[in-house]
Length: 378
Image 1: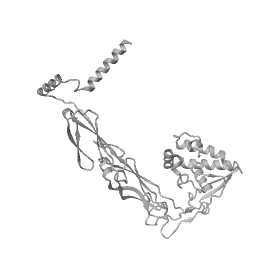
Image 2: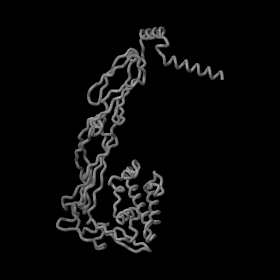
Image 3: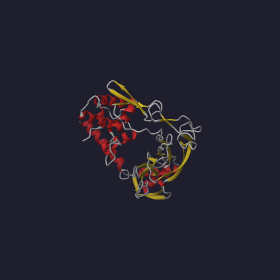
Image 4: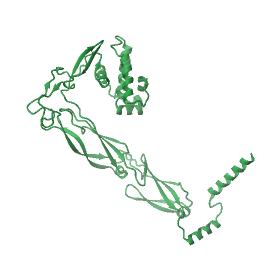
């Protein structure tokens, strides 16, 4: 059975990024293979620590782990994408913490030629409950970057090309001995790209990208819930110097409705009815999100809090033929601003009323009296 990642690193579940780094750095130094030569157990522990940190340092992976534990990365997904190339993976992790790789192993990592994946973008979109019910196609404008058409993303002036970095020889890494460690870090001349641009493009300044607001069409399916995230692959920022584009994540927020509250696929609504309708019985019509109206029958003697269920008038279930229900709770409205005649009629009604007309209040006060009489006798 796998040990809990938080327990493995000796941190609480609400640890912040800084605390996580400190805990991992301390344990990684302790179990580093160079400090434990020939110790297979220490190397295994070192690898497990790297796997735990790889998951918890990434907000999305950490969120999945918090919800589902190790099961989030089963069924062929591996440990949150933790690669089998142990040396390369640990180098990436140590770079993240120390800005350098400790251990002196050859990473076998090839320079990217300056090409880097573009950043992912986030777009927050508010939609109404009606739009969440029916679905919609929305047109949005996203500030992003696109590939420079002048240099086709290379960053070099047309007719020229990037040159191999003379500092690292195109490897993108430089290495130096420090005690019993061999420290490897990104090349300061080319920032780890392995290439430098001697003659940058005049339009993009060597970046290979230009700012632009892109117009995109987004499909919002019927039944979408508040907080849903939609991923549009390749619609993020353009990659640096011809690298692949990032992704665009659209976070949906369903605005509060004036009349309906939502709980999953079900809708809830409070409706006031008059005292006479509640006493004598009757009906009322309520509008629904599908544009129709539904008639609700009120039986005589209905009390405040009575709930009526209208089947199939709730929200559609996302990518399913199922539909939720509408629950209507009534509140009895006490008459106000009575005329003289209305008051006379109510007073006459009160005179001829019996306990059978108000069994709840009659029973309540009888039980209260009995309770306190019994209390005084003891």
